[in-house]
Length: 215
Image 1 (cartoon, rainbow, N blue to C red):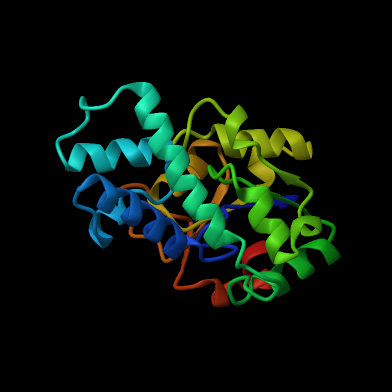
Image 2 (image 1 turned 45 degrees about the vertical axis):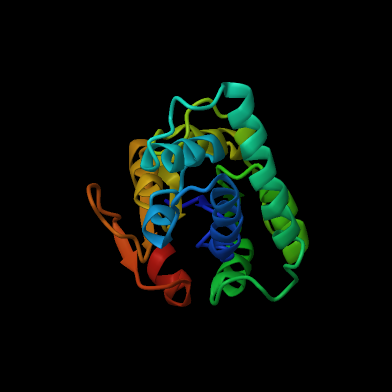
């Protein structure tokens, strides 16, 4: 029986992928490094530091910087990203999400956000959606990032719900792997499947049909 629904943030509740791309592109340009949409696709669903490592790997610069220098670069990227996020406003949630959340609440289901973004609370605040979720995972406290199941299991524990009674909603392959590893039912939003498939694949959030998914 479904008792909780756990959502990823970027690409599921709101589209901030463009903000991530612009921020990483600005940093890469500053460093004189290559970065394009194809590289950006590899960053979906992974942590900020891992994203930076991927960009450095693509440019053969993994060993060029100290850990402190990498931390400073990641911080610069985040400052840029936050400046873009602050332009979000209520009404910017992706199609179908607000109605789906309302149906979930009316049905007595618990909801949570399992995002690797440390800016998740800020994003939800800008969207006017902070009160729509019972729990928002603190990415800084989760040791292992997706595809490890840790952040989804953290949400289930915080909600007091067995993972088997949870539905996870994700738009990235790493997220689907994390949901399945946590023992939850996985709903994919236009996931580019390269390994583990979601239990249900949707083309967009507009197809989030509460009766179909939950009942």
